[in-house]
Length: 106
Image (tube, rainbow, N blue to C red):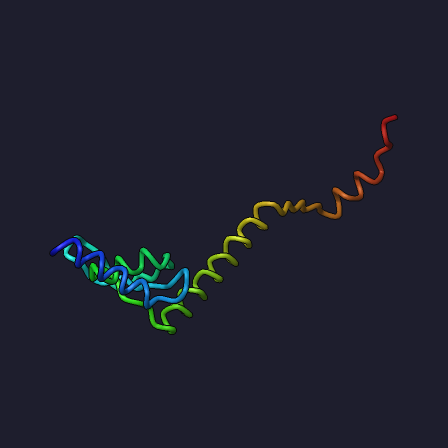
């Protein structure tokens, strides 16, 4: 492929993309690329991947599923972080009564 044509195509595709960041869905490639992997990339990266045939623009359904998966992952991460910080001490009634009767050392 002629490099001039390649970069011209990239500029043309880039001109059609209005947002600074877009969601793309990968396609199967000969070098091991898996199809259906969603990523948010810059307009320049998206244009290059589209021209190379390694990705397509993600559908609104794919974007919604990707964003909900990110929200769920963030919730799980926050829960795990809170779980690390919470400390619980279990005291039986007998231990509580014994410690209440002990005089304080002053």
